[in-house]
Amino acid sequence: MFVKNKSFYAHIFRLMLPLILQQLLRISVDTVNSIMLGSIDQIQMSAVAQANQIFFIYYTICSGLSVGAAVLVAQYWGKKDRESISVLTAHALRVTLVLGLVITAAVAMFPTFFMRIYSSDPEIIRIGAGYLRRVSMMYTACGLSVMLFGIGRGVEQVQIILFTNILSYSINILIDWLLIYGMFGLPKLGVTGVAIGTVTARFVELLVCGYLFLSNPDIPFRLSDITRSDPELRTAFFKVSLPIVAHEIIWSLGTSSGAMITGQLGKEAVAGYNVTTVLYDLFASIGHGFLSACSVVIGMTLGSGQIERAKKEANSMMAMALGIGVAVGLMTYLVRNPFLRLYALEPASVNYARQFMTVIAVIWPFSLIEMITMVAILRAGGQGKVGFYADIVIMWMICIPLAWFSAFRLHAQPWVTVAIVKSIIALEAIVGTICVYRYKWLQNLTK
Image (cartoon, rainbow, N blue to C red; front, side, top):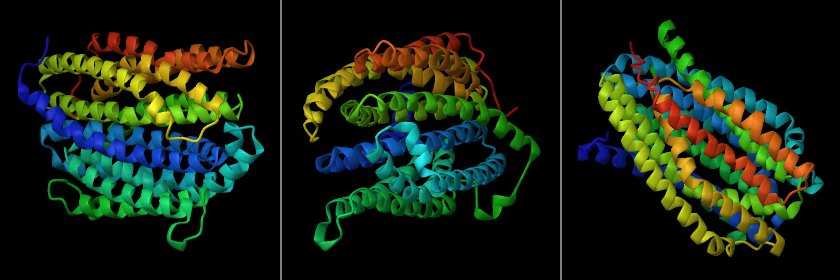
């Protein structure tokens, strides 16, 4: 039932470790900003966290497009078809550019409208809207970088991703530190400093990644290829990507709804939930790095036509996911108190955060199974629509209504509402496992 060849596991870990580091670097910026702002003012920390919910939705849409591109690219890479990879990259970058410009314009023009979705507190809305208007300038650049990262994963060039992020996120944290606290005679800008650091870093990221991407001989794409087109490949890109994007939109809106619901439960619950999200995202970098590596490996196997081997790879990946999930859950529970001491929170917020983190610790094994089945295996075989349908039923028809009823009708404890929201993960892990063993995902998408 399992792959016994050690080179298979070595391949996964060789791809996985740089991707985990890349995810950790990305999350570390939000973590450090949260800690720095939280040490100054709980309101500023909450305003930035709530404003970033908009970026979270945009980022997940861009990630969905990049995953769709990476799925196809990985299969063509396994087939050694460099020509098709070049054309697919051109289609993907053009779509990402248009999307980024549209979202940037909407957020820049109506930041207060978007902030009111996530908070009822006037001060959080005011501070968050100012931050949102400034930070929207980097949306397009970030979307293009995310797409380049996805293509890079598909052709196993993960070192580019890691190097770019080491540079850009180091710059991000440095500028934030200088401007949040007003170091070395610089103005003490707080939230505005975070916006300046974020925008600067994302443009540096795009320039560096673009240069490394275009100058790498192992990546079959050059800037002169950007106008290339092929109707069949364009159709294949949208056929694979759109269900994934739809899933990402439904999922991100549902996940964001947890912030929307807790955002109406008072400042203390908002602060506790946002700190919990920071810790969750830190550990989630392990899961995201693992699933990205698994998606590339199993995509290459499908592209090369080794169907029976793909079954064994799926079994091995799911077993690994369960083990990693249990370990991450234990780590979450063990570090919750030391992590909370990094923040200057009110006692009520600390209590809420401790309860939320316990819920997260219990859910982690299910989360890794959900990631590897729904996101890595099923998407690699072109079955991205499974996650979309699961989210519609489980998330939007069952769990979100129950969470809303729990919070605003039963007036239950906030941890109960968060537990209901997170139960989505456990239910989808079960559905994902069932769908993997139905084997409809065993498809060579390059045919």
